Image (tube, rainbow, N blue to C red):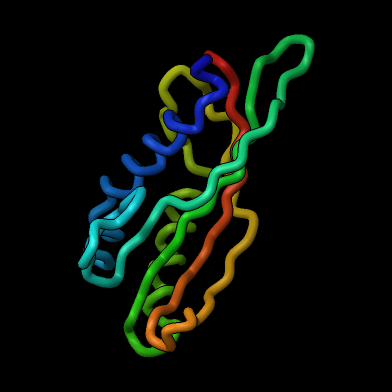
Length: 134
């Protein structure tokens, strides 16, 4: 069933991010899994959790997904700047999701942490979506 799959939402998010010239000027790419040797900063599509959101008249899924920012520029500024652009692109976005209708997408949480290597900052953003079967 298309309404169960996480993939159409991931594809819509990927298209929105890679299609934005402002974001792409800030990063080297958007990846599901970055290739070895990828140059910083970049964005990865993170975890995705789905739950049934159906009722008597609607078939739908709620998805909570994360987008991760990876930076090695000193301090949190670069990660925070990229996260601001991600928020602009995805909070209350009106994306086209194949086989589904996006009812709502909203930002729900974020954090920036310094990884154990002492060099890499990771920004994590979570978004909540509700999709109905088309």
